[in-house]
Length: 128
Image (cartoon, helix red, strand yellow):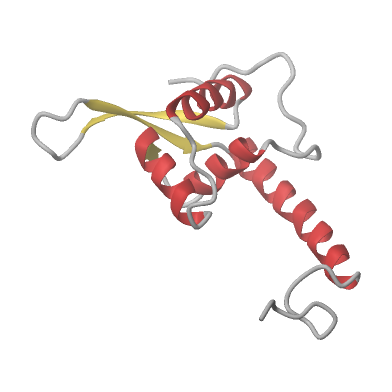
């Protein structure tokens, strides 16, 4: 299935929304269906981000339209009686956008750390 591309594909140099970035991270390890993406986001954020179905599927649609991800087809779940699920995969554009965003965020974290805002240092001790 060929991905539809919007008239303005995302600029890999611009920052991604948190939902888009989390989905790209979830798909970096391979194809996943929507529920597996939601579980991965919950796990990788230590429970801090709970992506509901409305956010997830609306974001997936926009990501499909912009070419960041592609459908990998439908598969029958191994559990009897389960319905078919759509699987999604990262595209080359999506991988570049995620890498660019990761580098951008790393620069910000380094700048914050240099200013004493990151980690547990002598100037920023852990609360007792």
